[in-house]
Length: 595
Image (tube, rainbow, N blue to C red; front, side, top):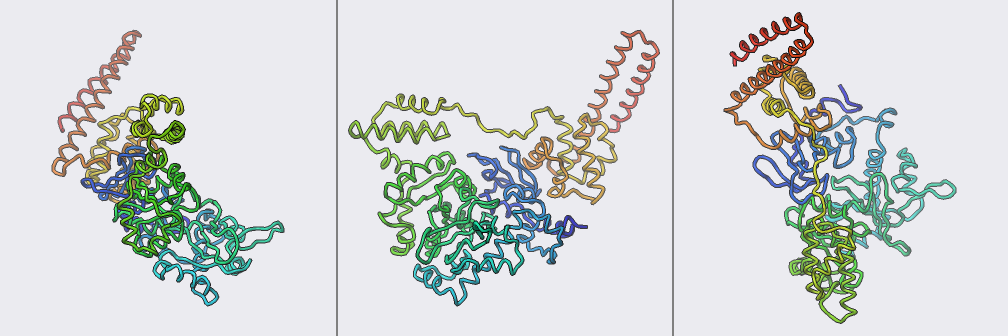
């Protein structure tokens, strides 16, 4: 059997091979907590880890936002992939070879725009790399040598070169039968007023831009000759947003984890020079100011960031713009200030790795630097008025109330203003009082009551599927009061009957999205509530309690019907109901006597 163009047996092999802890660790910094792993959820903003991964069950669940599922669900969610795209992505991760054959016309049409763009980018990256290594590209090779960028950095970051000319890439893509409108959508080609396509990148050193999963989503280019702009990035597309991606992260995230912190710089060569010098826990923005999305992305891998700023006025403004994001993201941030007219590339090449690392170690917390250099200390009236205006502008952009209060206290001391007055100004500027924010909650969790006994029973048989035959023999599902849970139990029966076991990482795909699925996932991943030597007893007790509850409900229903029959003066119906009640009592006695 196949799902689309992918054979079912290959999908099963991928699911068997993938380890969810290893997979998720590529996107989230996880720490072991008992038999599970915890980290900050990549799907919502949180300061206390509630994202849980179970290596035993091969599933994940976030107790904050309710996202959960298996490895496939995680990849689809975090990378925005369709099912076939996620399977192909995991096939590469696990080394499972998918059938390598030309796609049919129908299969090509089924490929999403994103998937077609990713395939195109991989092809074009190889093309640019081959040009860099060719004889016609000595200019770029000499340029890299002059900047001390060695072969290891070139190969790791897959640098390439775009030839000087208007249609070298276009001709190559036509030769490969790539639709030119697709290349335009990817930002590789530009269409002029006459409707003709030409190369966007010409005579440039090429930097493939990868997402955190290592997929090439865009390109950057550095002009080697005269002209402007010196640096050029792909335009925003279905794959690429420069405000949501960081250059180099896919290559340096393990070094960030190992070192315990990330170094944030501004440009391609800042990153490459540091990496080349052995400073490898580094990422770079892509020609844009830092955004909240950048901070959220960094938070997945570390809580400590050293941000490298220029010491000039522009650097101070950049610090002021970004500091609020770091504070709100609960990241411990240091401000690394370089000497005037110096950037990380110059500094590490002139002074070396050791001096650069010493500069980081001596760097002050970013909040202290901001208060000292931007807000400043007490001065004359005009100075204090300007410092107050600057402090208010910053404080009113802070989302966290507790940290806003702390900053108000520190700023008031520096400026020499009464703390209560500064707080009143902040309240006027934000329109709300401190501690007025509402804690985020999981909107996906069910607000309707769930039968705890039946829910516990279903959770138990999923955690201990060896009890499913006994459940079927007991025919206990007919005693369930919840239609949802009864139907779920029948799904378990059917699944077990088909393959003779319950593979949780596969079974969760059979659960319909909604509050019940969220509740099941949270219970399965939360803990192993039943010890192996008590499972049999607990199972029997639950069966007994569910039956007792069912009989109790039947007695209640019969009683109400009997009252209505008596009130309606219907002796014949009363007689039938009394007989039914007697039969029910006998059945109850017989069933409950068996335990």
